[in-house]
Length: 116
Image 1: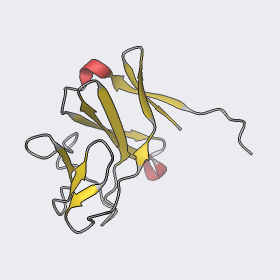
Image 2: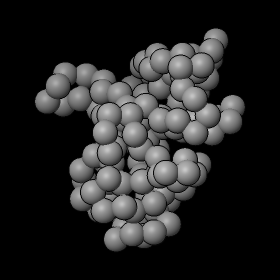
Image 3: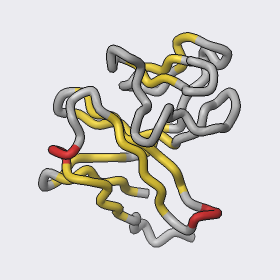
Image 4: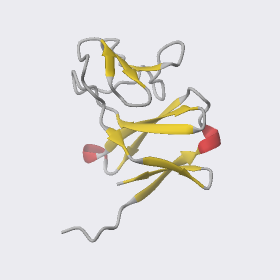
């Protein structure tokens, strides 16, 4: 039974993430770490588990690179699937109609915070 409390993880400062930028994180022990990434769109941030719904592999091209060339969509490095930044819905590629797993994130005191 849960006591209703949640874990809070400060990921980074809001100003460390450029508009249209992305940044990856790993929380927990190496073998069981939750790998995730955050994307900034204007004054909003979105967080997703770093796992493609098609292959289960990570999405980033190189560390912290999750966006397509024009920084409008999240892009899987393995097969080029495109995902809507605001929802995680796959718009193009082999997992079309699939979704990235969204994670609860907010901006508080100029910090990006994940709660779980």
